[in-house]
Length: 310
Image (cartoon, rainbow, N blue to C red):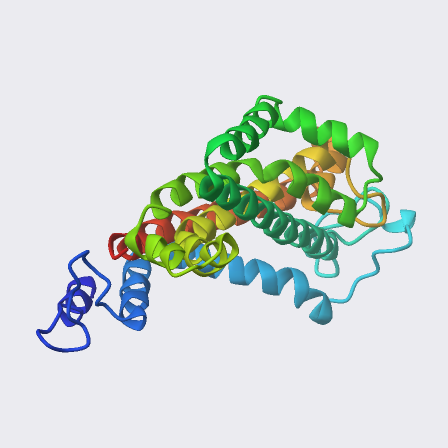
């Protein structure tokens, strides 16, 4: 498939697809994205990962509309029941249906993961692109701040901030987002240092274009590959971090929950034989994180095609 698309994208003399001297500017953007899609679809693990992500989203957000459970009030009369026809994954120590609990916990985990990744990538892109484009003293000061913050152990910073702020979903999103932006900032800054010396950027400056125009119209759009790939890993990392915080007791208070909180609650009952209190949430975390990593790896490989055309 890839070879057929590459052949189709070969430059034609005098045509729209004629290659430019710098290599690749002559390719139409639509053709490049078709090649990226072809490379992505060649990765079977990426397709599996994408399918798992879609399944998890449907399971967590559409599942409760089909499988109705009570997730607000305790019901000790049905506590710690094993899996059955009425409760496919059993019940927990306070009588919540575990399948419904898994869906509710997945909603919190995915919401925090996506939102925290969006905040982290947004701050990182702006910070890194600004530092790389400004250069000189501004770049040195901004990146020394990043280096200093990176020197603080990530989990320690999360635990400290989680202990200071009230533990709710919005607060967890903000805390994780404000800690996780450092890596995308360094990645985007490195891309910006390479892009700012390109001919088209110099031409914009010669024609009177300001730094804002260069940043928004040329630098950030050309770092989209790095941004998108890092965003997928940021989602996976955020899910792990919120699970870690909840496992340590710094999570959303009941009746709200997430997968990490379910692991923490079920651990004390694990050696009593109540396996359904820990395995479903653990498997959900592993599958979701691995799925995002599969997609991120495939997107990195696919977007290499676009980077080669710059």
